[in-house]
Length: 257
Image (cartoon, rainbow, N blue to C red; front, side):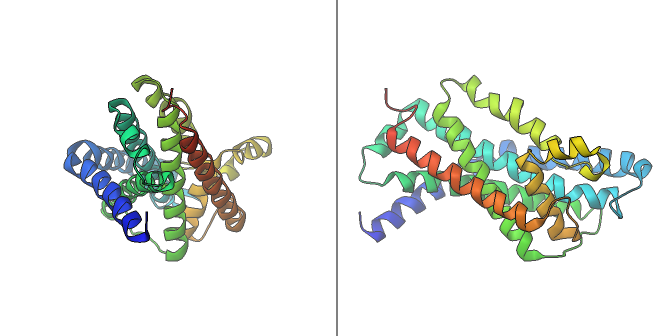
């Protein structure tokens, strides 16, 4: 395939993925917005008023970046895992694999679709947060870089989950038993500086901590982790997962019997 044909193939997959989740916006975009609004009300206003300040900021200011990042993570992941597994279950993947389209185009197309949903939901949650607090912007560049890398990372993770899944139950195992606990323990609702030294070390094994802390730095200018180390960790994980997913796709892991 020449460059023009590759661009057409890639843009077709991305448009289809965006059209898929925007067509059912009441199931894909509205629920996260409602859920995060409840977090703002319950944790930010009701509980936050009793907690007081966290890291020199009001509790609402502190948790908003974490909640935005949490919405980006969950929606980037869920969009790809559900879409690609459905395509695999219906046999549509085989049609793409036997076409002249390179495998990396398939992978990038699904990842970009997941990124689009994650970023769109993150933007919606950011707008909603303005009704509850005044957002600060310390570094727009850091916010943009972390958002793009994180959405790409978890969209790729969703792709791998979909390839390995043998049933619809398998699709929900990782989000329920791994992704959700790591997100809640990733300093979304607290600073790890409050933890004993031992548990601070354990927390640094949680990859989501690096994303939430760096994203919070983009807004507040403060982070539990050195942002350069955090960015390096995110980049390495993103590249590693992408290579892993591409190799699995090339081998037909979970697709070819």
